[in-house]
Image 1 (cartoon, rainbow, N blue to C red):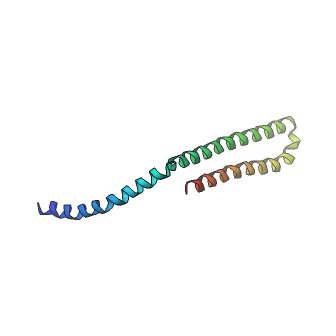
Image 2 (cartoon, rainbow, N blue to C red; image 1 turned 90 degrees about the horizontal axis):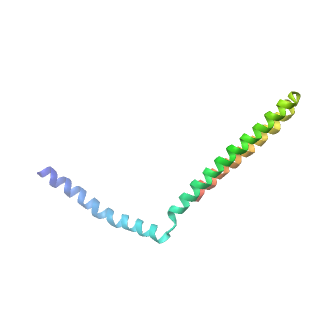
Image 3 (spheres, rainbow, N blue to C red; image 1 turned 30 degrees about the horizontal axis):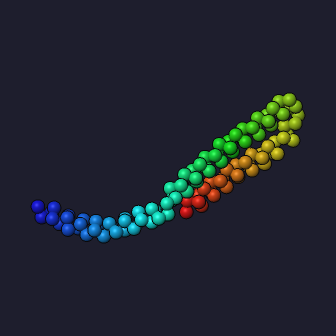
Length: 105
């Protein structure tokens, strides 16, 4: 029984002190109103960027391989522009991630 009283004496002040802090946090979220929408927007932005980047890289690679298939001697001329194009597409996806991360801050 003494242990239970000791635990209650330790836990009760912590709960009483935490209640106003939690209430203030909830009031701040209610006043902002759209705090959850920025996370939804950031998630949609990065999701669409990844889908678009993947589709763009797929189309670029398909076009390059089709061109190489029609003219096998052109693979040396197509390789560098293909890599640069894929790097730029990937960079745009990474920038979308960075912007979505900054929106949530």
